[in-house]
Length: 546
Image 1 (cartoon, helix red, strand yellow):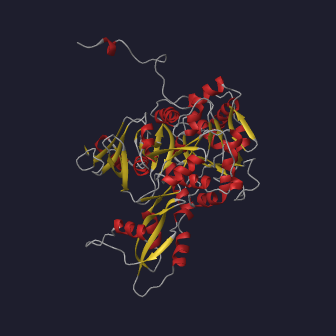
Image 2 (tube, helix red, strand yellow; image 1 turned 135 degrees about the vertical axis):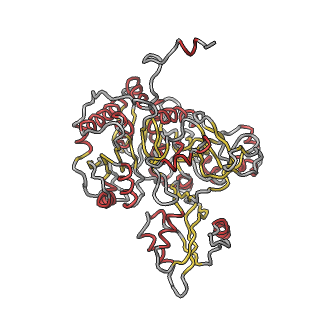
Image 3 (cartoon, rainbow, N blue to C red; image 1 turned 120 degrees about the vertical axis):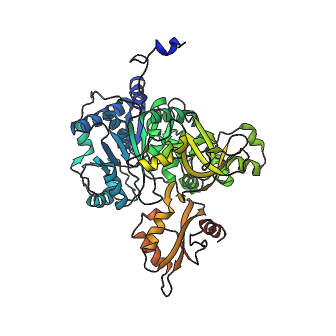
């Protein structure tokens, strides 16, 4: 006999609404209208005005005919305009696409075309490379210049020319602050698009939905320990997995965004001391900058600052240095496909009493699932059975839950492969420890993570092979105190051909973004299998020893 719990009760407007992070900002603006939402140089934006400006952006986009599933692309630093885009764009059911500001023109052009960009907002800092990309792209979007009024006087890069037909502030002026914004038709609707670093060929477009973004915003407040009116310093690029969803997160607790264009020690310390920063996120390079800063750039501050890092586990010396400087470090792990970090090394207080070696071993582990992630496992990809929780048997790390992407844009085959067996396959190899904590052992995708940026070894190898003297090559990551790891290339020259390290590096610079260029070229015979396949594990061993 059927239960009346199923048959008599149903969803209606009173008891069911689609999840979206947009309502968090609306609430914060109503409850704390005068609280400072954004600090940027001399600018102070209240929650009332943050909400109004987001509405005006949405209204202006609607007037241009932008609507559901249209792509609005932005090439912006960590500025107020970037935060406004995270709310204003999805308010008209459009999809926000944040470009990595370090990319070169051909990759930018590919993304613009693949995303079918309708509107492109460009910070003048990046107008040169974007102008070049637009010349290569097939799409012809409406281009809007963002001219930051608080562009620092000591900027390491000058402002570029205006390349758009509109100015961002003028564009907002045309919008209506009383605009009737729209909830998503379905919480499964796309909210944003982020591109991975392609391991073979072009990068894949990862699609996020409103439901995942809303849940990630809640869970970030939990795992980052963010209380009411927390103060967050933007050292993590907002283009990276939508800033791990923190642009949406802070509205939950009516926190303050402290914008930072460039990660520089003096400016970070000044912001922490002057604005009472409580939280920040970043790659190990950010920690190195903080603890290795000259004394004259450092500032004292009374609060303990929570620092979330998601890359290789920081060395014990770095953790000790961070603690001495007033920072508490939490180690996270995730991927673009999981809205950023979805695994946290939940620390147990009784581990503090362990000896240094055992404590370091505990800190090296990636950890356990976020509260908003339903399942995390280490699985044999052939049998799809969980590996023994013995801390030794290697399998593939897999995710399952509401903070896993919708899939890859226009790439059903890649999506089906990633989701085969009802799990998201990370491509990372790891082990499960007896207490349920996972630990990454290797990356099956040959991705090098340098300063928090993903570098495809295959992309770098493709560039090397375009040099006439290169017969064979292999690119691997080498440990680096500053960047975590950097790409190095092992090169075997063709018989009778000559080339210098400088020549090959310059060749790579002509084809790749600067951060992808190998930091060293080692001329050597490339180790191969009997079938001619390059043995990457041997190259990694060589990089460790030499």
